[in-house]
Length: 250
Image 1 (cartoon, rainbow, N blue to C red):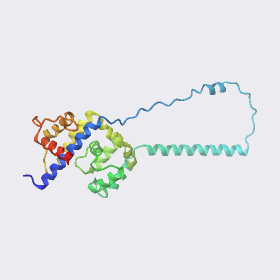
Image 2 (spheres, rainbow, N blue to C red):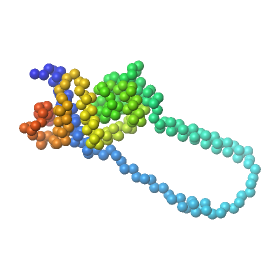
Image 3 (cartoon, helix red, strand yellow):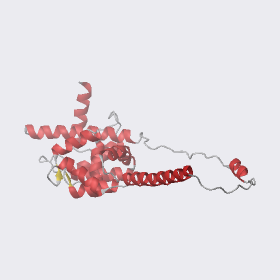
């Protein structure tokens, strides 16, 4: 007999298996990329034809006070535009300082974002903690502990994503989800998930079983209609299928 804690942990893993199975069958249907067509531009031949005409010579005249004011205003506008462009480029460029300040919004006085900070972080970016995109983000940051991001992991990972603010990360969520569409990345993330999750106090699944789950998700239909109970699947997956069918009937 399992203890209550072990049963709870097993149920949690079974729920995760259900999510993984469903995710695997739906990810390939996602199409998060868009084809952006090239803008068409006018050829400008008409303007060239107009400019090719010879213009009559103009008489020189002495600049008036109004001309001086216009020239001065034009120079001021030019300086302002250069300053404005510089500010825009600065905002578009990744800032380590801004990324560091962003980290401490969630870490407080520590050098690690813990569970409380992580909860606020997920709320700010509009993602549930159990959402698969958080696993992809943890993989990108190469986080070593579930529910924690260290300062070094944050700066290195967010730097690779070029995200130094909540808004930028929100804009990158579709990209993070699309990473799962790549079979190589999916396999790497899946393997990372095992090491990431095995820190749990209750070890109810080993690495061989974890790999079997991936094979199970690739070969078994979403409704489990082609699952062979007499096959060579591990007992854990037999328990999962039994649990899943009972859940569907209730």
